[in-house]
Structure formats: structure tokens, C-alpha cells
Image 1 (tube, rainbow, N blue to C red):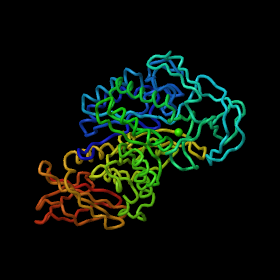
Image 2 (tube, rainbow, N blue to C red):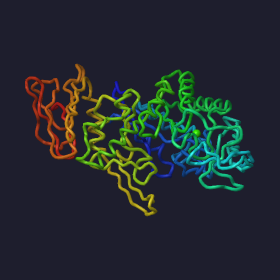
Image 3 (cartoon, protein in one colour):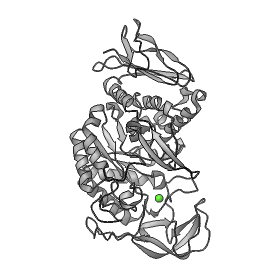
Image 4 (tube, protein in one colour):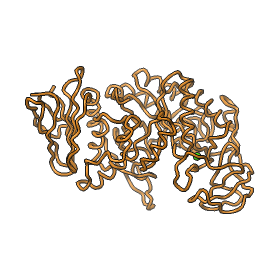
Length: 492
Ligand code: CA
């Protein structure tokens, strides 16, 4: 994707309002997003969750209810109705924006009825350690979807479609997972806690033939209904990795299109990410979680962080064609579960590093573009009020540079712990190139080659007002202010 300088936007965050307006907003904003250079939107799960109109979508209840049936206390989802979702996708397509659907295959929540099932209690912290004998438990595992009445699919889900649950309504024990009779945790998952198949809710047994058949059938139905262009797979480290490749191949065959897919594998262990890439035969991109971690650390450690190492241990460095680069998401934002905040001063630097370089498929996070303001409770139990700043002015400039100038060979000058830079030399169609300098300490400067002799450059960020002109070999000393980034483009 990076060949054509595509850019994705994650078009929601944890605190997106529950007023059912998001799909309408996509429809309203599609034209201006396309105009500034956004080529794809990752939209949140569009199906009904356990908390109905309030559910972010990750508490999946019914994959076939896209805001159409009166279930879980609401017809619409948190983001709108099925018709509004389909309409938003149609409008986005009119402006050339692709839509990626959020797909959760790990779990379901909010069963309609309980069932008796034989299960063995296992330790939450060591998934191979049994805590007692097999026993009869009462598990909420029967999904009958009474509001949908068998429309689109007649399959009712029962305990045998799942592997385990964390709640026994007869006699619940803390920190316990109940592994159902004749089931084992799935292989090819993350190795934390011994085996990280189980995350939450009713854990789907992805090996069960009826489950595999239903998920493939659902994929066909979803594509035919919505005409989406790709997928974002949720929580992939908790599901047998090979199934994603199998399902994606099935979908590409059905759609007769090279549908895009990116997985959320939340791990700082680069080997775990490479292992998933191998399992999925390089068909599924991954969010570059280690790079986001580096941004977080760099933003906290300021001048003590060695900027020349910013891409060390990342997917962008080792597997750049499969790396989706990002600065924040709904789990890393302030007060959320994987809180890994990139401090405000560093965000322009981080976005320059993902938007203006050759490697990676960049993803802009909604609140970094529009800003956000919310209140919630932290892990310490206190309530906090959060303002996330809007960087729209700067991001629009970066998007313009990406679209107009960020082409051709890239020369890196990652030769100093506090000031790094790079140039793009441009191409015949898009001449001039760019020069980028960033510093996490005092004012920075870097002698770099642009390939364009006697050419005058201006800093599109307006941080530095003076112009810089290259010599007759195409070199110049480019500058930036302390703790800042400057992006030098040919004077118009
Ligand atoms: Ca699982």
C-alpha cells in the first residue's frame, strides 16, 4: 500500500459518543477526508454488542445484527443503524475511500440462556494448571437471538461452539477459567500465561467445524451486504493465527478482490509478531505495536532517549511491507487498558516518522485529528478529565506533503541521539523531494542531500520562517527548533 502513499484513519476512539451518529458523520466527512489525502477508514465493530446501543462493539453479541433488530435494548448500535452504515460506505466509496470492517473472532458475550456443562476449573494465571476436578457448571453460552428470529442465519450457538468461560453461575470461583469437556485451549496463540487463547466472555472454539463454517458464511454475507474493502482483526493473539489466513483467502475468493487485512497483535515481543506473520503466510499486516511503544518511551524520556534507535525492534524495520504504523489507538489513549500515551510534544515528531517516510502503512487516530475531551476513572479509582489536542492543521500539512512530495529514494541521517533527519529525493513526476529534521533536545541541524541543486526550501510546519537553499551538489544544512520537527519542501 505504501507504494501509493495510502493513509488510513481509525475513525473512532474509546470515548466516541453513544448517540448513534458516527455512521452519519462518516457520510458527512467523507468528501473532505478524501480531499486531504485519507484513503481508508477503519470503522469500529458494526454489529450488536452485549450492551446494545452503548457497546463499542467488542462485546460481540450477534454478528448478523448491524443495527437492524431490537436486541439488547436497542435497534441501532452505538454508531447508528444498518442502513446508515451501508449508506456511509457507499458515500465513502464515491470519494475513493476504502472501508475496513472491525472483526472480532475471539469471543461472544451476553448469551440468551444458560446451559449445564461439564468443565474443569483452570488457573487464570497458568492456563495449564487445573484447580480442581471436572464438575457441572452453569454457563451462559446459549445464543438464540430472539429478536432476529433466524433471519440471515438459523444457527444458535451452544457451549460446544466455545472452549471456555470465566463464570459459573452455580458456584463461581475467582481467577478461574472453566474449560469445557472434551475441549483444549487452541494452539498457535500467544504464550503468555502458558496459553493465551482465553481472553474474555465465551471463548470461541475456532477449530470447531460448525464455527468455521458459520464464520465463513457470515463473512460472505457481510461482504455482500456492505461491500467493505478489508478487515481489521481484533485480538489476534488469542485466536489460532492460521485461521485468519484461511478465512481471508476464503473472503478474497468470494469477493474476487484483494481485500486488505491488518491484525491487532498486542505485544512488544517482535518475535511473537514475526511468528504470526509466518502463521498467516504474510497475508495479514500487523499494527506496529513495538514502534508505538518506542514513541511512548521517546515522549517520556525526552532528550535522554536515543532517537537514532527509534525503529529498533519494530515491525517497520524488520517487515516493513506488513507494518501498519500508528501513534495511538482506543486502548492506548489516556485512562484505557493498555495506556501507552505519546506525550503531546512528541506527537508531531511521531506523525512525521509514520507519514513522511517510505516504510509502513500509516494510521491516524481520530482524536489526534479532531481532538477529544472526556472524563473517566483511572486505575487508582480517581476521576480524571482529559483533553486530547487536535493536530488537524499539522496533519493536513503532512498529508499534503505525503501526497505531493514524499516519493523517490530515501536517505537517512540517523547519526545522532538527539537530532535525526532524512530526505526523499522525489521522482520525475514529483520532483524536489523533502528534507525532515527532528530533535528531542535543543535546536537541531543536519547536513543532508536532496538531489536538487540550487533549490530553495521552506518549512511547511512554519516553525522556522527563513528559507534554506541547497548548494550546487544538492546539499544544505537543514534545521529544526528544540523538541520539534521541521519539514522542508521546495518553495512554491
Ligand atoms: Ca480465544
